[in-house]
Length: 255
Image 1 (cartoon, rainbow, N blue to C red):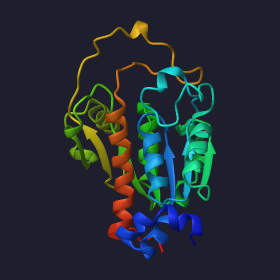
Image 2: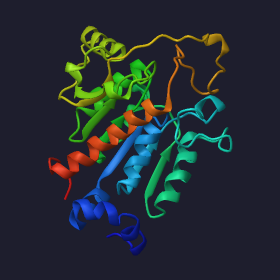
Image 3: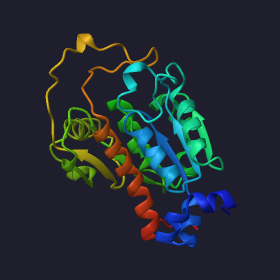
Image 4: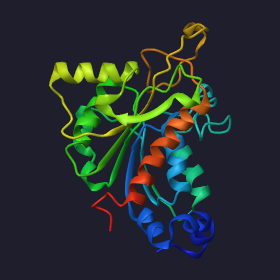
C-alpha cells in the first residue's frame, strides 16, 4: 500500500492510470544492470513512475567524465560508488522506495549469484559485449521481461532513437556485434525481447588520448563521445517500456 506521502507524490500519475495500476507498479520487482549514462536515467524514470522495488547493479565509481551524461554524477559525488550515489538520489525522490545496491560487475562467472527469476523485469544497460550476451541469454531463460539498450554513443539526433525486437535491430554496430557473436558461440536467447537503439553513428572528432581513465574498476576498450540527451532518452525509453508493459497488463507475474 502507498503511504500518504506517496499518494501525494504520485497523484498526477494516478490521475492518468488510476489507483489500482499504481499499486501494480509499486509491486513489481525490477533489476537494472549498469547505471551509467543510460541506466541511471532509467532508474530515475522508474522511481518517478512509482516503482518501489529496484535493484541496481554496477561495479563502477563516479568520476568527473561521467558528469556530462549520468544522472547521479556531479562534482560532489565523484569517487562514490555509482549505485550508492544513485540510491541517494532515488531515495530523495521517494523515501519509501526499496532500493537494493550491488556494487559488482555481472559476468558469466558470477551469474549464479543473481537470482534473475525473482524479478518481474530485467533491464540490460551493460557495455561489455561478453557480459551483455551472458545477461541476455540467462535473462531469457526466466519468466521475467527483458529490455535491453544497444549503443548510445556517437549520436546527436534524438528523433532517430527507436525500439525493435533484438533480431530486427538494424544500423547499430553493437546489435550487429552481439548477433554475430551469439551465432558463432551458439548462445542464442530462448525468447524475443525489445531493444532501444539508434541507427545514427557519428565519428569522434576529438582524440581519445585526451580522455581520462573513467575509473579504476572498469576500462572500456574504446571511448566514444556522448550527449546526455541521447543517453537519457535511451534510459527513459527503457523505463517507458516497463511502465507500458504494466499498463498493458501483459505481465502475468504481476498481481
